[in-house]
Image (cartoon, rainbow, N blue to C red):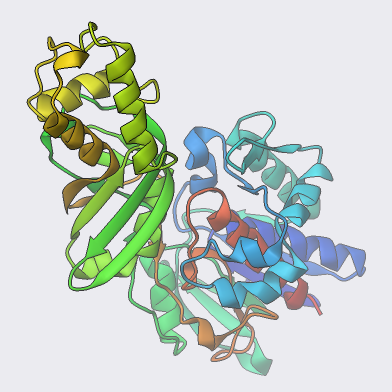
Amino acid sequence: MVDSGPISIAIIGGGAAGFFCAINAAKKARKAQQTAHIVIFESSSQLLKKVRISGGGRCNVTHNLFEVNKFCENYPRGQRELLSPMNQFQAKDTIDWFADYGVKIVPESDGRMFPDSNSSETIIETYLEQCEALGIEIRQRSAIKKLQRAQEGRWSLINQKDEVFDCDKVLIATGSAEGGYKLATSLGHKITERAPSLFTFKISHPLLEELQGLSFPNTQLKLKVPPKKNFKQAGPTLITHWGLSGPAVLKLSAWAAREMKTAQYNATLSVDWLGSMERLDLVEKLETLKKDNAKSLIKNVYPEVLPKRFWFRLLNFLKIDQEKQWANITKKEMSKVTETLKNTNFEINGQSRFKEEFVECGGVALKEINFKTMESKKAPGIYFAGEILDVDGITGGFNFQNAWTTAWIAAQNMIP
């Protein structure tokens, strides 16, 4: 049985939101000189799994953007609801929070922020040390299968071994795990349509063959999803073994998550490989190359903004003789080069998970949650935080910030 002291809190889910809530609730209780018994229940043997693998093992903690309104624009779902919570605890607060424990969070040029150790273990160790210091109990391999009302407004948690744990408040922070959705449904909550988010595009096309690993820093993408949905995005794009990835593709996948699922991941993608260069500027650049390098072979002289491997592949794809001199390239060939660089159309025929950083849209319906407290409107005493909610952000630290923010808000309101 959980301690029946002044207040007992059960955290269901040993991930980012669960740990952050537990630590902040314990800190608030200690500051108020209140006794609190806080237990984290994790169904698996792994704690903080997504924290460990995020950013290639570096942990993309948050994003270097401190204007709340602009920050919230990076959530395809939940941007309006997050405004109030983010005004209470935003990215700068996250950085300050870690600084209090000697962890410096530093930005990279694209706005992503990581611990200066470049290791997610720094974040994990900080959490585990704080749990020990604050007396937070952690129970692994303890899946909660049922929640039911107990006496005096308390809650009973029943695990897979039919053991019962009574508590005053409960946080459900199970990410996209099925068990969390089942618990939420049992409490009367609606789960909105779920779909993969932050995924890469499967594309089979001769222009992409043998070019895996090439990156284009300033592409512009247009996605057409049948029957009539259009999405745009700009930024870096990466050619992979199976198609296209990179920040611009991942952002598109987030905004079009549900539409792409409905279309069974069949859509048309238009790629402008030189998004920062206007079409007329490209035409002028090619004409200048032709004029200044008339006797040079076109395989040896090409726009410096393009990778050499891509230029060779482009000529091969367009059936332009690489041994031809620039002086002999025709207007039709110049037009084909321009059109392909500014508007290559690909047919998408599937999606792939982005490494292990899988994010899912959909979850507990937002209208059923009080975002000033993160408490359920259906079941008083039950709180939600993190990805179990119908909130998801684009890549770049936004999903973790949702976890930190909603968990912090819950913690402040679970302790009276």
